[in-house]
Length: 383
Image (cartoon, rainbow, N blue to C red; front, side):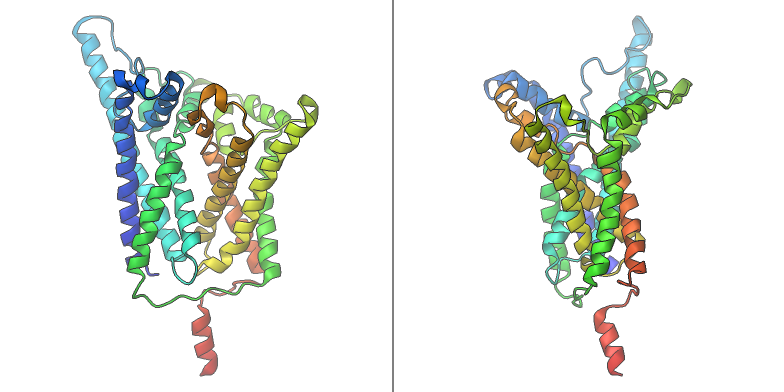
């Protein structure tokens, strides 16, 4: 699919995810009404407000600085901090539109929903939605932190906390957005020239997928081990505004957390390790199929595709964690989804590294060395 055709579904998806997140943020105020307690219990309301708060124009109570003490100075200071909060949300919504459109445009262009690629396009665009939301939250975080009145105090830990707050709402919003994007993409691709699937040598595809998965496993297996994670958390010092980067590094480097089996029952330990194995299995399978799905294996396409594959591996492991979680009766069903979508920053980091690594391996192994389509090659051979 050409970029001119792909830009239409990408823009539709960008507008839809922006409107849905804006609507979700506006709904946070409705949870503060008195009648809400008769529909949801207190724990459910608290959890839902936590999900929607990052997209709400109504700042949490006490989150903004009161400015100077007393009189007009306090009123003026409070208004300035409130304006900063509004600016942060405006940047956030513009950024989520831009980031989603950029990623969806590349995905729809390189994985058009034709010739059996529709499920892959849907899953890729769905996975990209929480990534775009995380990037938008990251870009707007400095304005949000400054609006609290103490931006110079432990800035990096505050930044890590804001990035981690995007919540599972982006995963659910991403599904609706992906469905609409792919539907529009199929309509725009109806009269386009068909782009057949590539035939990638199985050995080269498996080797490339193994190398890409090994990059992701570096986070899951090595960096996420308790002693290594603790060293990442505490070993990096600093002073002033950029002190204590440990929390931020964990956000962008760790896809999980695990300890020795001696710390708990062996059965539970094996179940949680099965979730890690499932994550890597999903990543390997997605990277195994990715070169054959792409119309052309470029570095940006492989990087974004690998990010989406890593996100899906992460979500698969979190769903398995949800299945073995026994706290639903205590905290309610909404709390069951509270961890959904966490770890997206680390998935972005290692997906970006895994994609080019898989591409280099694929080229060295003799797969997908040219950007020409099979149809073109066949026609030239006939001449």
